[in-house]
Amino acid sequence: MSWFKEIVGIEESQVQETCLVIPYLMPEFLKGFGLKELKRGKLFSAANVESLTVIRAGIGAPLVGDAVLHLRETQVKRIIFFGSCGLLPGVPNIGIGNLVCPTECLAYESFTEVLHERTEQISSTRPDPIFLQKCFDEFSAQVHSVKGMTFGSLFLEKQFVDFFREQKVQVIDMEVSAFFAASKKIQRPAIALMVVTDIVGQETPFSDTTPSEKRVIAAAIVSASKIIKSLSKDRRLAAQVR
Image (cartoon, rainbow, N blue to C red; front, side, top):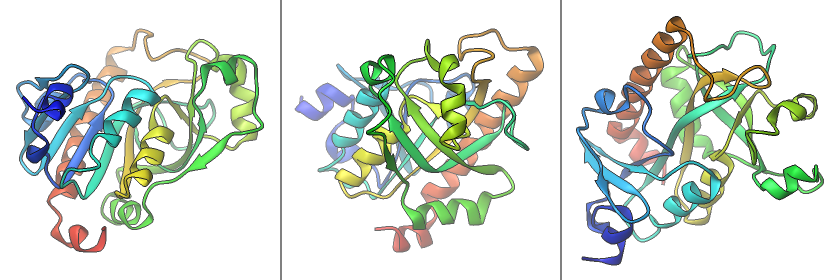
């Protein structure tokens, strides 16, 4: 067994031109992609479905960043992240169950920096502009453009709501800035797609959702799977995004 398969769950040569990185398996995700299971490696899990490879990295910036770095020597040509995020209160025209695509993501990933409220060194990460525009050109009716921040603590989110607003941030997640940074490091175009699952400061990703919220989140995951599969099959995109 190769070191890659031991860590990721499939052989390096099996990774397809489009790779989808997810932190965890959401309800309806396997159904949306027609997957029965992922092959488990020691750190990640992976499987191929139709025209893309799916890698479950685990929750948090370090694991997602490392998963992307493992793709450096593969034939992958573009990478998509799909996960969940919290929405800042009062953001107009977006709610639980909506799909969002960040045009910028601030990196405030360190728990220690968050704990001590050190905000001087927050950097900015971005998706590939051509890949991003393709997504908006095709799916603007389904996907909202947002500015995000990857934040290093679920527990401390509530006390930073005013700071998030000062930074003009609309959504908070735990992985995307590392995903963008790692994709840039290995020189692969990348975009992130997320479903809003909670309102920052009012509830947590682990709060009980209402039956109606569960339905719209499940529907969004199915919609996201269709968008991702469409992007992975687009040969015009393959020619433009290098």
